[in-house]
Image (cartoon, rainbow, N blue to C red; front, top):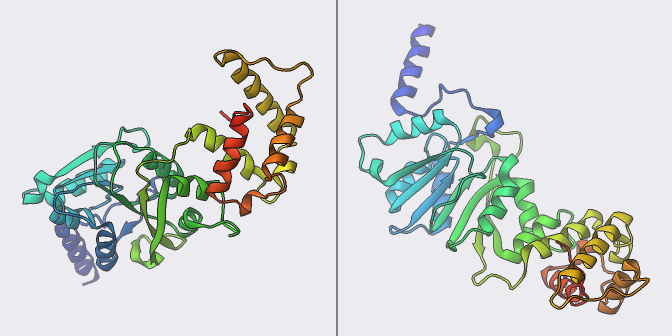
Length: 309
């Protein structure tokens, strides 16, 4: 009797095409969202329209994909696991949705993202940070992204100056976009359950973008957050930081048109100290500075020919 029940369950699973017989790959961070109420909530938060092209990262067995196919013009699903690709294609085969689904097979970090209006994703932790910045720098602009992350990562995205989790990720993301926490998702909503809780964030990229050189901006923020609890005067006295800034300064001066003469006996340490002191940021600590503070500081450094990239 037990064997019959087990075999019957396997047959039902196969008929549903929900891939419960698959062994989930931990290297890909595979945790399938199984709660239909959470799926509906994520789609609702995206504001999806019938004319939208939707980019989905990590569709898995397609629990969210099939619902988005009903609400949108087209879904482009990017999946790294060929087994999941086969399951999803089998799930929509012979339905009208079959012709609205486009599969991209491979690593999304290495792929050129297509045009899309909305992005929806249940993100594996190991690619969360690089994917966020790939998305934020993507052109042409998209309307919004609704992404699920491990909760602590999501909290870092929305953290404010003074928060314990405030970091370089917080500053860079909030410089380029508005980020809001829209939903908490417990671990029991997934199969298999992950070890940590998840949260969903909604990202709307600033359009037009801020008038910055992002490499310069990120170079400054990266150096500042190496020691986010220290004053900037203290952090910028580090030998490795001064060596980098001295090299960048001399390269910039030599390649400027016309070239800028570097004074004899020039000291990058004294130069940086003067910029920090005169700008009023010398005693500031990165953990308390917002995007406007970093933008003003970057302008002061660049005006003094100090470069970070």
